Image (cartoon, rainbow, N blue to C red; front, side, top):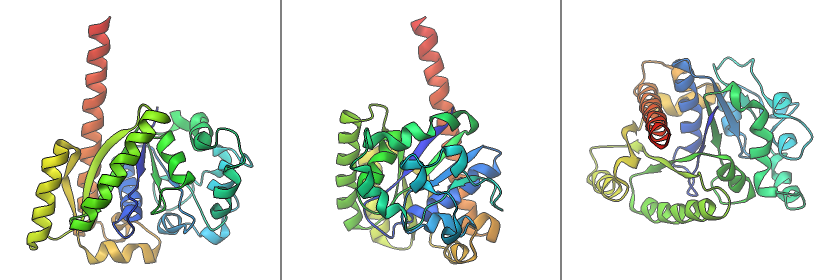
Length: 268
């Protein structure tokens, strides 16, 4: 059964799509079965995965509006090693159409049920805003990965996002939790970076990933070539950082499963 993770932050330019694409590629490199879903009408994660958003025959728009099944929407013949449900500008219309549909907050969750057993991880990339698309992602997910830069404005934004996650947890998805806080575009030479990083660890504790994503030219160049950094330059600092993040995520997931198994045995 797949673990579904939403990658989101209501602040733009913090590395959401970069994280989605590169974490998907890194998990796939460890032989995990991965599906990435692009829920952003800009379609950047789609393009960064080597698919042409303008040529999609079936996208997440059709999936959410019952015009296609997950099986029909999945692209599995890309050069990247993970599967993709892509997005383009059509998705903008879905935000309006979803308002008229039953169980509008759960469209994505219901659509993914038939393919859950095919994957180990399903990653969802989101637009930099809280709308019905993001609510669908959060309602379908087990956890949230929050990429953020270590700057003071980011601290304000993350407190608002935590409040949103709490509300979704209470009203729509009791399983939802913060999976981890990921420090992106990290520059240890800046004192502000260290100060904000220390605040994060103080507040969130072990929710903050030990892995940090550095500022890296190759990481920034890779999307223009339609590929993850691991495919573009596997020895770059950015690619290696996301491989480390994938390892950390896998270890955490295995520890959680072991704890759940132990709790079940104790109950029996």
